[in-house]
Image 1 (tube, rainbow, N blue to C red):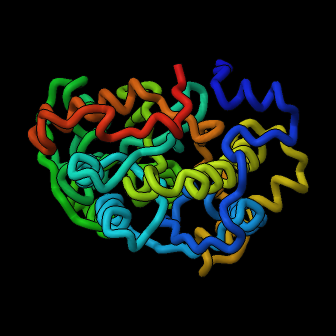
Image 2 (image 1 turned 135 degrees about the horizontal axis):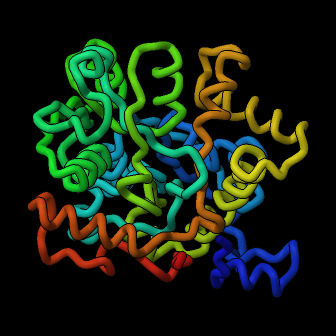
Length: 338
């Protein structure tokens, strides 16, 4: 389905060279730190960096690498990291409630017809009868921290299937991978660039799709400090514009498959250098191609999905019941997807 948003409409009116984000670029050479995970879902950041989109927007970008969403939110709030793109977590919501963080856009999204996040079973659990999500009752489910996106996904799956899960916090994504491979946990849900290679190697079994339980899930968002959102609007819009150019290149090459073959290969090689720096290109190709999910055009946001997530965090007592959507999201930067 095509969504005509405010920014997209402005782009159509203004022509191909119009920027729906930027009236003026940030001051040339403005230094910003961008939080990142070595995930395919962070492709727009890497593309914008390597193709000079950040530089053209006046930004001198350095990356801060993380292994989970909540530490990234803390770094944003402290000012150590300026912008980031990852899942909504209890930590991020709490920091927004304290007036130090704001969501300013959307990024990765589940979309019908595009292979998305997978529900995994360990081999041991699969052999013991965990064949579908309906078999999860009483099983252990991996997550990084309480209040993480893994916690949210597992809870939504459990509610839909009317089963009880035993959540096991393991702090880092790598630790969760090790735990499901060794059978220390029974199940997990994760993006396809991690799930599919694990399954192809025979280390886990895919037993379901997250999209079947959380349709149109806004998996990740773009966020920044409240100070950047309020005091640095030109810099922030410059960042979003450059990021959106990276997202457009990614979607064309690996999601919509509208890019030429040479362009597609350039994007794959670029992402391999950044996501799998220790692998040869051919070893990195399959997880990159298989892991491609939609990044919202113009970094638009599915507000309904974000509101549903916020309601869940409040219902579980993971954040204050008084936190509002407006506390979390600064819509002056956001295109709302319907």
